[in-house]
Image 1: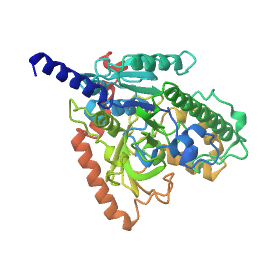
Image 2: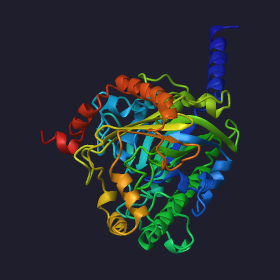
Image 3: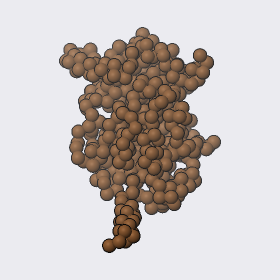
Length: 456
């Protein structure tokens, strides 16, 4: 056999290998905005109309204990896209920015040939840390589905794997999308953390309408993936983000504030309809996507790949989930009111760094909360709800199995002492690992917000 023949055969074998090698899977993540996880049908809502999300759950693995590191949009997104804890990147207040040199999912996947796009709300900085292909939301706060089509078509034509983040602005206020008449204010079930008034029921119906609208957006995204014939080679993740902007959800470390809907579909790989109670976190998304793509990370991350959980090679999740809230710098917020929290599969432990301060945010400045305060003048239940929201003890402990809305503080009970000691130790170890110095870190928050850092 001469040299020419050998080279021809070798070339043919190389070509065959390249064609036969399985393509890297596409990675798609849909992120809602200010949506309490339990206001979705499959997560227990009696009233929400979320048919696309509910159907998706039957095709996916659904985690009942998905969590995020902060109950605000900007630090959540920085954490999601980097896999690194907020204080470590510097992105821990709201309207924040990560430190220069921080690596995001773009740095991990782009060298492997992926195109990485973010279509929708961004709320992340700086560009050097997050060099996505960006397509912003429209002026009408709509997702640009034409851009999604163009992006997927372009990747298909060039045979390029893609990582696509579709980030809705629903159901973030103002609640002006969807059809509130789908919901009867007199028949909906209000959470026990709300003051039950006519105004509350009206606003909650508007919120549920926007949850339904967000569900339709997710349905459109799934249909686009099918139309482009990418369903079988695409991993799809659905996340609901932090709780809604009503009291006791967003801006708090109560469980509804940091607990998220978390589902993953991967046809042929993930067994559909699985429900997992393993603790998983937003910081696990980037390392998981990197693992699924089969590439080596360019830096160490704090999250961990949950691929073994997705493939049912293990049922064990994390022992603890951690979160923090920094009120300093938020719109209408307290000058400072830092919160740190840790939860396991039974308890949530909360430390309020400055309990002497009054807790304030956009919710406490809203007409709705003002109406609650008005009612509290003559209604003892309303008085207790509004007081609990704005005035917190130094430590709080809740049994999540029995107290979903964190209403019954167990911290002062003698039998809680050992639980508090254990969880306090875990929380302090996490803070030390992150370089979180508690109140000192809170007072430094403005340095990590572009609005204020440019003024210094």
